[in-house]
Length: 170
Image (cartoon, rainbow, N blue to C red; front, side, top):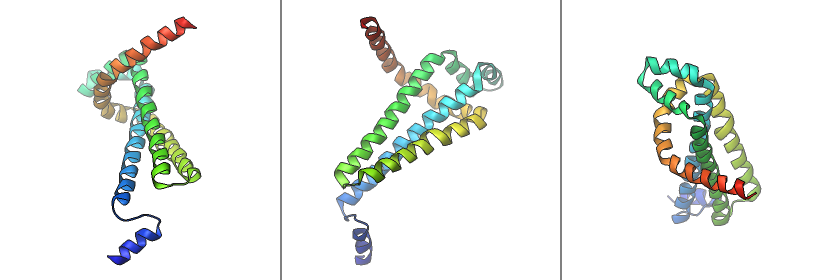
């Protein structure tokens, strides 16, 4: 037990609540990166699939009907996806800054690691998967995206009203 404590201390971590805080930070950061992955994968697979293929999927299976319905209003779908991805990436950045403040992580390595994680896990990997397996992923993500769209639509509508007002003012 003392050896484990010595190993933890040697890595610059203190046993007890601070170690748990670090684990929670990591898990929350992982959740934010996973959400970014989800939205990037959904965007790429759904929009790469297109309305024509979605129409054929709707004739073949139930999930295809959901995909087709999502693509009936591409502006609303894209607005909701962009909102979700922005919130996920903002959460990841906020968590990184929180970790720097609370745990004393160095800003250079923390921000470089976050940039690499968001680029690889939030952009490159999901978009490569979405383009290569558009039907596979569109069908699997249609249900969760439809549910998310129900929650995000009111927020997107409020944002649209604000943006319309802002455009009229300028």
